[in-house]
Length: 330
Ligand SMILES: Nc1ncnc2c1ncn2[C@@H]1O[C@H](COP(=O)(O)OP(=O)(O)OP(=O)(O)O)[C@@H](O)[C@H]1O
Ligand SMILES: [Mg+2]
Image (cartoon, rainbow, N blue to C red; front, side, top):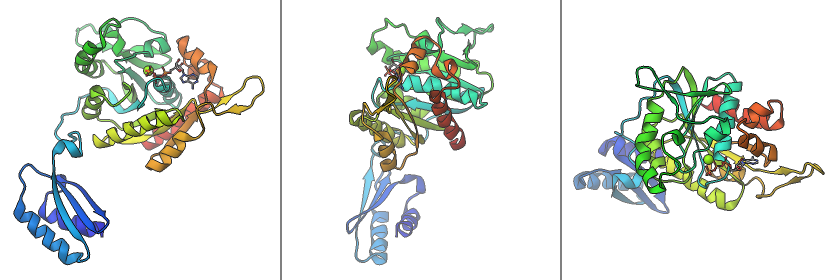
């Protein structure tokens, strides 16, 4: 039935103007994205629907562009030279381990033979330089046109923290951030990067929407803890990206469980399998679980992420499994 309706609608309205078609109870609802309402077409379409599905009523609704999507078409993407694929690491809620996941994922991708890069685009809390152990601004190339990325643990990296001073008030950071992030991503001399990982700002704010419109993402990895409150925000995040037409690669559950170093018993401090179940319910891929583990935090704080510090540990295996799934997907 869906297919028949869709074929019929596309006889009256161009495909790109059809925002949504749904059947709710005994009513067929067709949403059209159009500047001027063409009532003649509407009447014809409704008559045809009536003929084909006499037991259904029908409505043709005209919707504003920005209600149905946050402008997927027409917005020009940034040109990122020297980079084949870009993935974003995002979370609805702050502090759930987005940066820890981004940095270890980039290292795990490198372990899997990818030429990997990491961009810290979190204007609210740039933390990649600390996690990778570098400081200061990226070097400017000889011709003065580009930044030269830092190279630590075999990956290329830059941070918004180098361009926006920590002491800049938050409100200013927001205003400056769009341009600064564009510069950072498009004016760095990336050397043959297979996969770039971007540590995105948390939430669903303006900068995040700009990034999802301007960057041609291969997909987004959503990080969440198993807690309900984090998951609610993760769902909002997934929906925001979907609205901008950005594909979701899947959900990672961080701080998933805790193994007591004394007795070896597992405790589910933030609940268990919440992200996995949420992924399932939303029809998204569950990419894997990372335990809550002191060594992971210590490694990040020391500037040597766990994947580099303990390459043979089960934690590194967990990140590498996620990396493999992502490589397969993109
Ligand atoms: N699996 C883990 N086990 C133990 N500690 C972790 C784990 N993941 C993250 N952490 C620690 O939790 C804190 C928050 O993690 P992180 O900075 O990666 O989160 P974030 O989502 O990027 O936060 P923000 O919103 O502040 O940018 C850090 O101290 C980090 O070392
Ligand atoms: Mg962070």
